[in-house]
Image (cartoon, rainbow, N blue to C red; front, side):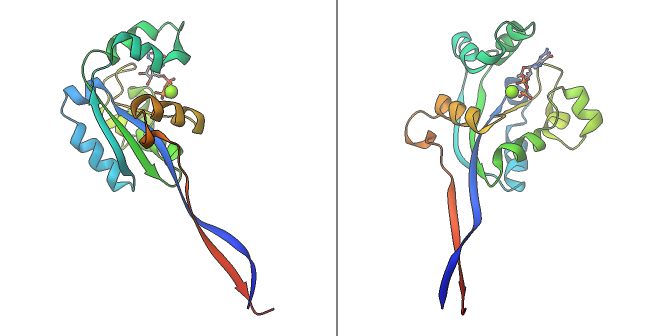
Length: 165
Ligand code: GDP
Ligand code: MG
């Protein structure tokens, strides 16, 4: 038998999700986590906290200067949020797909089964957050889960390819 190489059969990715203050206030935490697990995500970390204005500004630094920034930080500090570290192959894109479009009204018309359609309130208060890239997932995971848990990780399972010739 000859070893010909190896193929990747599974890889797990991490993303950072938040259940925002509107969804927490409206009692949707358990439904959102249930939907998340039903879609195949593993909750690798959870923390329930209320952000300060300075923390919210830091988390959303990319949006500083935009007209919705003040409203966004006011909203995000208005009550506790639930931050979740989620694991699954293709977690970053799949979580964004499960959330639906940013704007709740758009989510309701274009993706009525999405989390933002089901649990969002309006353009700013849209129930959930999800990292938009590998880089932001690593940054946002470190923001919420400082220490070992935050270390970005890709689990790879490799299958050998063996043949007689
Ligand atoms: P996301 O990645 O889908 O959450 O969207 P963005 O990163 O573009 O924006 C961050 C958050 O700011 C959104 O989830 C909304 O809460 C808020 N936001 C974004 N765009 C707008 C907007 O045009 N108007 C208002 N009022 N809020 C916005
Ligand atoms: Mg974003």
